Length: 252
View 1 (cartoon, rainbow, N blue to C red):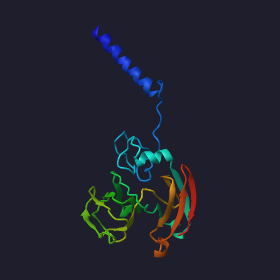
View 2 (spheres, helix red, strand yellow):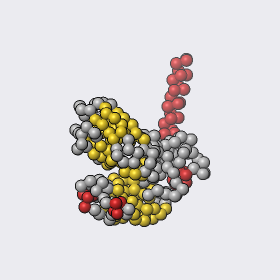
View 3 (cartoon, one colour):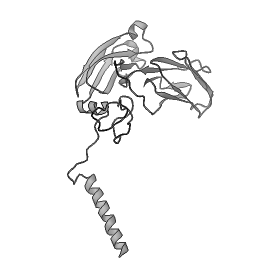
View 4 (cartoon, rainbow, N blue to C red):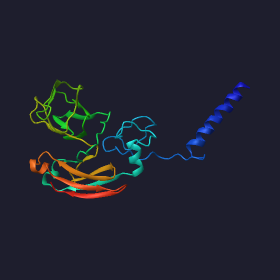
């Protein structure tokens, strides 16, 4: 008799689970809305109430009406697509990003950025990140490597062997050249920006796409390793309407 009761209870629980998950009840399960901060981490905001999701621009995700994340989801976000018209964009990836927004400070992602050292090459060559992001430098070569930068904070992470890593947190915006004291031919760039709305251009067609941009008026900037100082000052205004896609051509 005990076995029968347990069997009946288990069957009832399974049936109830199926009833909820398949939408047989009054409330049908829906996919979570796009996360407004997905430009630097998450494609979808799946955090539970009160927890911080990767890429969310606010401190917490909750039903609070004052939560910036909830407000952005309600308004809808747009997309910026386009191309960079510059001869160097056909050879090296460039970073397109929304310049700092007055009054806005974005929390860095908990997930680290990553640059590998393999076959005496930094990979990727260009890494855009948000201010405050920690980058993990790996060594997957059979030789000893070093990482140092003469730019900005001017750090030297020392030397380390295969399989080891070093971390560095980037607290200030700017472009940081990455070099190896043991292999002069190695070079990479970390581009630290003040918003989570950025993208790298494709070498194939020089195109880029910045997703999940909230409605507003912004200044687009372009960074490229071969751009001159005057070209690095280039900016172009772009206006995003709720849920709209905007196409631009940038000529730094």
